[in-house]
Length: 302
Image (cartoon, rainbow, N blue to C red):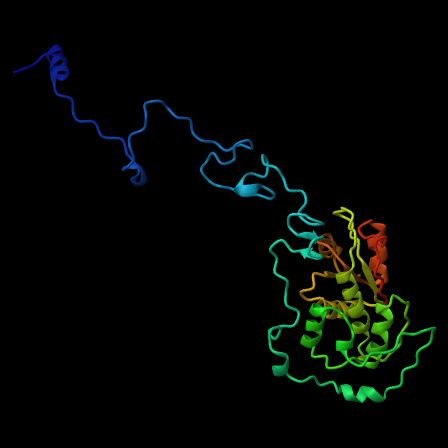
């Protein structure tokens, strides 16, 4: 039986439509409730709304993981009372390190009892026969033990950690003179303890003194200056001074030439009480207005 074209069209219109193929849904979206009928705009990131894509992005200076473009910036990363480097605590008399733990310059034996520590290789009894000449009017008498010198408990603890049994001749004569506030020029051989002879009274004087610190975040105002002719000697003095000032709140910083100045500037901005420097780098810092000696109230010289 033949059918006409009109019959074919009518049959197609009356036929049951075939089931349509469903829209593909990704596996991670199949268990979610159906979205509302209102169309949503695709999320786009911009400088004013950088978190619109769902990714949390943390940048420099943005609190709470926010954007670095639309958040208050913390400009005082370092300096006196700054965010990153702590500041001077006038109440406790030391530098607040803002959660930073002070590194131990003694190694692992800082808490080892003194009587269990290895004996030092220095024969202190051999120093007794070394002659010492002093000049000046009313020179303070020398001391025989560290117990006779009132340096403070923190400094005395570091003396025991350094395994110093008794003061050397230059220490016996120099420490009382410096503590009395008098000028001193000393000459002694290498290894005779000159560094400790002037570091002990400087650290003790800073701990006892009440020094005003003007708020100058980018200009360091050291209380004491130790001038050294060479880089190697400056680093040696710095390491020894760090041991003597451990857990005292006194901060020691070294600055020398022949090395990038950026890291040294950051250390100065964190605060400095005792500056160990070579002449060339010190002049450079003074010309840059990054160091001022107007607050140098406890001078020390090498």
